[in-house]
Length: 298
Image (cartoon, helix red, strand yellow):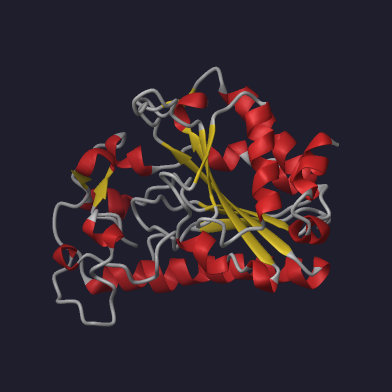
């Protein structure tokens, strides 16, 4: 089966002119290039199919390469392929053929309809008119998913080679979270798999910067970090990974998927964060728990 992206890139690696820091930015859910064949397979209109996008996140973090750090960004949409899942997390009800034991068909993400090939978009809207074939899955996973992760691993390996340490910032957005009782809903959620994928001092620094901008920050609830965070985050081997979720209402209209008046301010805040991260001595900060307070104050 020919790739749906045979005539255009499915994703893009944007490298700086000069690599100045071991920080890698990944935007795997902000793709918005919908192949015609895929659109013909869906029962949803052009706005509904986009409800799973982390819309404009690649633009929010887009200054990273200009400041000296690479960015990997998807052009394919999350509704088409989710690279923040295991490679073969598939829902057996979606396919014509039976799925063998080699596929992960029982994960909570599959049960929720959000496997590697999602069954639904937001608000539980089914994506497809008919069942898919395994060739559909193979084309997307073998042709795009695996090359995407090869590219991401390559960027982290480059950082390790050049600096002896690497930091992956996995960039996401989230629907506005409703308030729970008297607790204010977070504007930003930082996910480090409950302290296992990133040095605490690095997470402290990022939290300090968002909080200093007047934003409410939570950790690991309701988003603790997905496949990329838990797969690549190996602090004991010098690779740190942190997932950042930004509430969409801060920079866009969630119904129309258009930027709102807060976009420029959020983009500027993210640029300050990027500038701070690339200016760090990550080797020292990752090994010195008290260093976040000092780094944030400088």
